[in-house]
Amino acid sequence: MANPVVAIVNDDTQFLRLMEIVLSDAGYDTLSFYEGGKAYQNIKEHLPDLVVLDIRMEHPEAGWVILDLMRLDRETADIPVLVCSADYEELEVKAEYLESKRAGVLRKPFDIEDLVARVREYVGPPEI
Image: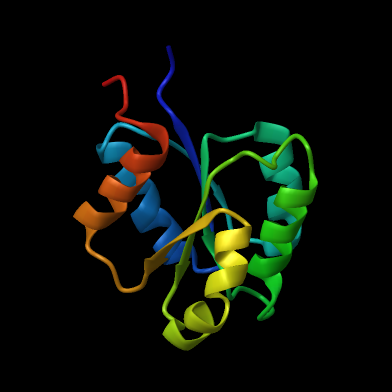
C-alpha cells in the first residue's frame, strides 16, 4: 500500500517547499500547487488523500472557490480539506460555512508537530 498523498495549495512557494519537506520527512507523499486557478483541476486529476488549502492566494476568494468546487464535484467531494490561514477573523466569520463543507482548520502560524498530527488525523500514519 502506498503512503497517503497530501496536496498542498498555497501561492507562497517558500511555504510550499517547507510543507513538502515537513510532510515528506514525516513519511507522506506530497503534491504542490501554487496557482489557485489550476489547483482544482490538479486535485481532480490526482485525487489526493488530503488537501491542505490556503484560503488567500492570488485573489482573496481563491481558496473558497477551490473548496466550493471540490465539494460540488462527485469525484472530489469526499477528499478531506484542511484550511490553513492566518486570518483569524475570516475563519471565525466563516466557521459555519467551513463546518458545512466538512473542512478542518489549522491556524497560521502553527507548529510542525501540529501539522503532522492533523494530517495523521485525516489520512492515518504513513507506511514508512
